[in-house]
Length: 471
Image (cartoon, one colour):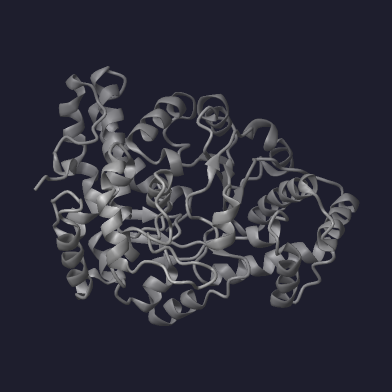
């Protein structure tokens, strides 16, 4: 049998040969630090119920859009991969889907998905054999047997990975039943929610009018009035904070913001509620709501995350038959300087505002994000995200942002994942790449070794705690 390459001791060090020994000396100081996971999309029911995962495919395949999109690109059908359908028609069972995944595992060569999967197989199950048609059933059986043991329950996995804090992400209309259960069992605090109001701030969603009606019912506010709409958000944010929320999250196609007069805001809301809005109205409403969310963050201190630049659900057939977040999202260009102008003019100097900028358009790193974070005290740069959460992506990011923004305007790392077992792998990649980057600077006499070690620890652990105000 062939063996996966992820166990090589020098893997993922990006430093040049003279700096590699320095990188290897830096890495032990960060390798075993606890994990701070301040933004992600793991299922809160996992932690509330602490039940076993149903099968290996449910752990590695069906929740992971990184994996699904690659398989789809080679013509594999989502039915055959076991991805549930909206109409409830049958799809492949876990073992059949797993065999198809294994038979096509060679497609992932060179991708971070392979790094994460190999790491997870070894870290959680002690598996070093390469996943393939020949090993599919044996690996499936070993994982399946292990999933029946207490050591592979979700909370045990958090302990094993040394996860100090992990946040999930829920929409504004979510009742947070799983977080209520965690509050009763004492888990809340270690597991926290995040307020993501896209379901009531994004008029491009087909159900926006119904969602706003539900928002009114949920909060008791008159959302047909602009002040009532903002009060509804104010109340809902308070509710989320009761269940651990320290941050809000906003997934938007652009970084546009607006600061309209009240009469224009009300007219825009009237149009949205009538269902007669167009794409330009939707963009303007999202832009205004970003400024409103920033103003609310000034009030309540919640950290604001702006995830801009994804063109979502670009395959209408996939969205219609199975739903969102299954691999058909594509990066787009993003203008943060002009887009954020209205918000920053309104409240960018407020000491209680902290806004973390995430972008999929790498051309903005040095041109926009680094200079902006290097000036505005309210702004920080989020880690390389989604398509750029990879060894090469991390290298490009650090190369472009540090010289202008410095190290302390970076928000550290978050894993932004739906796949629980990839969390320690992703953090390990980040830590190794940080050590490699810093080691090169030490070798070039740009940093002392002691400073590099402190920075490695900061970027691997403390930066995320500080950015998200985690005490």
